[in-house]
Image (tube, rainbow, N blue to C red; front, side):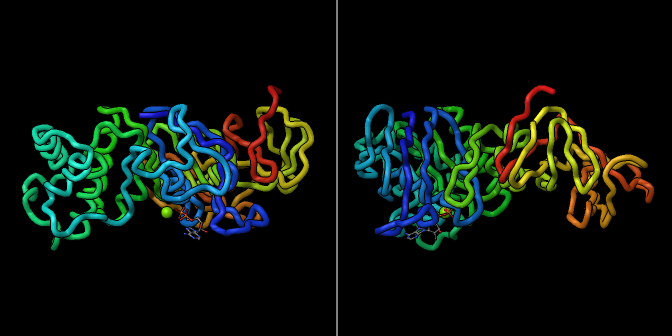
Length: 358
Ligand code: ADP
Ligand code: MG
């Protein structure tokens, strides 16, 4: 197991990158703590696999260094890095049995037959394939083959890190939950450094201690699920995490007052006079429907989703979402909204800015 240091790392797939746009991974400095479970979260094409493959050694970065512990592994092969990687689609040996597929990484490293037999049995149970251990992999469903790939990724206890690249894509929804739970318990049991790539926020937030949010080749925030919820450092994080995501409202800010289309909104902190693209970020959880006072809204639609209602409304022509408690009646005269001051974030050119105590 190892701490992983990314030092001044960046990658372009082009031979002669000219501008920042040419980089699939923009410059990044970060230390991944030994033994933590990370999720790498972002939409398709934002650079998640590029970063993961740089850590595993499948891609050589155009700039910077990677260290495992204190050892520079930037030019080391995948095998020398001693990691396990599971990909989106199954990689199994069709002519081998399920048992032999699972045993393969252990045999390769010279483990004893007794240990292999015991460990393969355990992993077979974890992936729910105990009964099929002696079947050949050929002819199994994609779903079953992917479970074997996952099992093979988890079979070795002595790896530096476990890397997963959207490994549950082809798995049916019930088994998805089951396998994610298994991965989590594996993490608790062995304390491996784990990096789990996904575009699904639920997967990321339930699996990881820390979530690394990527946007357009850049790591925009690394934080606990709670930090990402309460203090999104970039408007993208606010928007991408949460359901529905954070409302982003153009405003003018001066001191402790924000102005939204001429209406004043009191802020909890002092921000001075802000220039550039200034916006307020407020999650639907912290917006309340009121009567008489506050910003005027037109309610478009109310969705009852059980625990609460999602109110889809319009604020000066822009969509705004409000979460209303399950039992709250919504009458036509509730055409104003107010914000929970402590949960209003202020953004300048998409990045969060910290105010001073007012
Ligand atoms: P993600 O895993 O988040 O979907 P990727 O890391 O696969 O994103 O891709 C990031 C960017 O790099 C994308 O624009 C993609 O088209 C590009 N890219 C990925 N792999 C290659 C490659 N082998 N050659 C050239 N461009 C690539
Ligand atoms: Mg990918």
